Image 1 (spheres, helix red, strand yellow):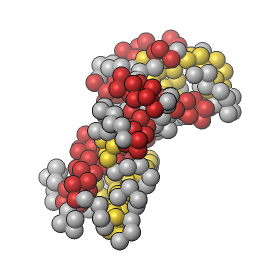
Image 2 (tube, helix red, strand yellow):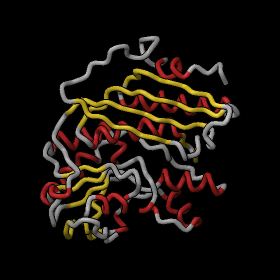
Image 3 (cartoon, rainbow, N blue to C red):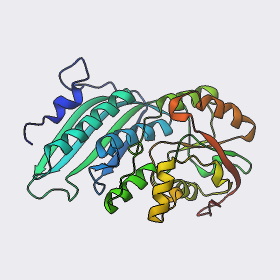
Image 4 (tube, one colour):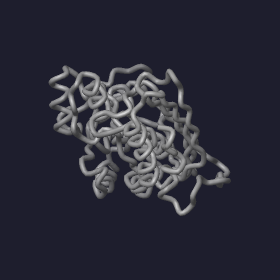
Amino acid sequence: MNDIDLTSILTRASTSSRGVAKPYLPESPVFASALLTTLPATFGTGNIGRLGVNTVANRLLASGAEPRYLSATVTIDLDTPQEIIREVALGMRDAAVEAEMEWTTVERSILPVGPANGVSISIFGVGCHMVNVTSRLDCVHPGDALILTGPVGATGAAVAGERRGIKVLTQSDGSVLTDVMRSIYAHLPDVPAVYYPFQGLRSALTSLGINAEIDREKIPCNEAVREACEIMGLDPLNLAGADAMLLAVDRKDAERVLEAIRRYPAGECAAIIGYVRRTCHNGSSGA
């Protein structure tokens, strides 16, 4: 296990043999983080390395920032198999390349009694501010259309399946949504609200204080996830997912924004899933 050099793996795709020594920080940097300590190191077809990077990149994008730099602390249990560590490291590397982000520092800690899942990761990201976006309650208004850019529940379904001995064979560690978000901001720079619903769609609507008329039939959900949830007695709307953004836009702009999103593979199944009835603190989603 000690032969695995995480720094070397993560920077191998770069023209440099190491991380960025002195990253350029813009005047108004944007920060995001992800702490993955309780999830299985691998689940379904995914792993926490790719999931962590995708989560940080998408949180930056939801804040109106262009993802730029990454740093990570990886804690490893001494008995964790090398192939799992390598899979996680390669997931971190490949996701960073897809997100067009550069690694600055990577710290590795190997403990005799480490994380129960074998590997835990803390990832920190920095982005360059692009546009003014918000997820504030007072920027969402009754009648606004709710657009979901991708499928729900894949991460949560895969993790739940891993713990129950059920393999959910679908992309479960997310995807970076840079192209989708660039297109949205290009077509609607003053988009009223953008939210990255990693903890689940229903949780996101509640956090935003949105009471909405939701059409469940319109909510994108992979068939493998839907079937696995039926077997496990779970609702995909309550499960974590790393593949989608939730937008609230003026009804008159909805079709134009939806068309722009669907031009990219990560947004092919985007849909208008409902309309805001009212906004309120701790409101019911209506989903």
